[in-house]
Image (cartoon, rainbow, N blue to C red; front, side):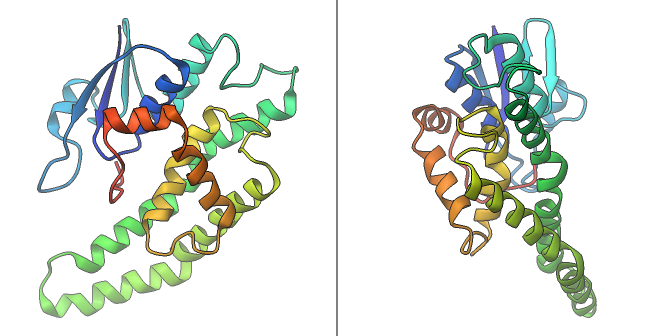
Length: 229
């Protein structure tokens, strides 16, 4: 029996969505965030040493990292290639694009968004009054000189891709789109983050209309103010 250890309001919703798209049975174990830190609860360390989510148990296998889990599910269960292109050399371009975006989501797209979250917390963190101007000055400089430009660069890159192609790997929906959903949702959660990105907004509208995505949200909870875990 497949078991998904799912942290509420987190990127692990993608694993539920993948399983729903594939029509695979699974047991869902939901974990609420710590009410004080808003991070994953200590109970998740009993599942995986890092104490993070998602974690998939499939028989004796215990696998963490959303990209690795989606890749595993596609390789093991997607026999009709519904959500993953055929291995190379067949359909090589689609397969290369699929693999690129599957890894790009966490490897390149998420770091600027996580830094945005960290900088936001620095601005609002409790501290002595005399330290606040210094902390905010550092945060503002980091946002202007590095984080903001990097975030815009990656959002423009994603927008360009979806302006050229309806889905990240090409003409059809794949697991790469499931993996890419969270960075785009995280960017949208920032006020006005996608105001000038019509292709990305259209992508979010399309995935929200998918019955499998709606079932995943119904079981795992809708994404709210997105966190880093």
